[in-house]
Picture 1: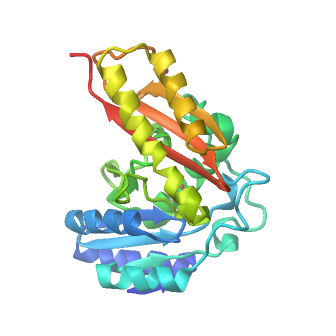
Picture 2 (picture 1 turned 90 degrees about the horizontal axis):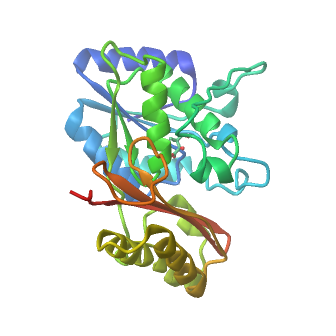
Picture 3 (picture 1 turned 30 degrees about the horizontal axis):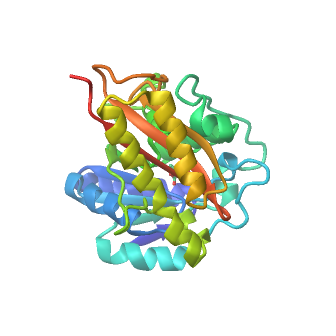
Length: 286
Ligand code: PAF
């Protein structure tokens, strides 16, 4: 497994790998956990070579967010990736990704708006910009992302379609179901910010979401059921609920009832120093 920090050697290494067959990219910001390793294992089933990028992307953090505190542990991450059969780790320095004078921003309208886009202005511009650059740098056949960041996945799919990102066919963007702890909490690098008590209370999030889904699928009114979800989280020790919404799973248009198209419940809530997000699918009304 090679670890590369500069673009020219990356391009040479990727073109060698490509002679053997397809290349899958797993973009990450490091601080790897079982959720990331699941993406890597899925990638290995789909392509001869897996490239993992590790880059804490400053452009997707807003003022006052956790850019400085975000865990950086390249050596430990590489130690986890090596036994997984990863061919290459692409770990650029910020200056290699955004050199002096860098001026381009990618903004995806519609799916970026509201939800995390409302609470974190500019966040999805940063994500779309870095993912577009990663796609151009690695030119993967396949790219895998966790469904835990459902809105991010929708933004990336839209961006790749709109910008005709191809190699030579469209990059196959695959969403991998969320990996959860035994108590249902979605795995996240930010779970490391939780104290033991907060960690125990955080399990209320997936539990309350499941109850909400059951109620809505059984015909309970959406707005009132979402308000109950919010109350349940505050009662469980969450500081606030940034959003709890029912949306069309693909377009992310707000829904006030289940219909024929797949729907998704999406929630962001703060507990202690952590901002946790989660999402779950609902069955359609027919
Ligand atoms: O999901 C993440 O870890 C990041 O948003 C991504 C896709 C690697 C872009 O920085």
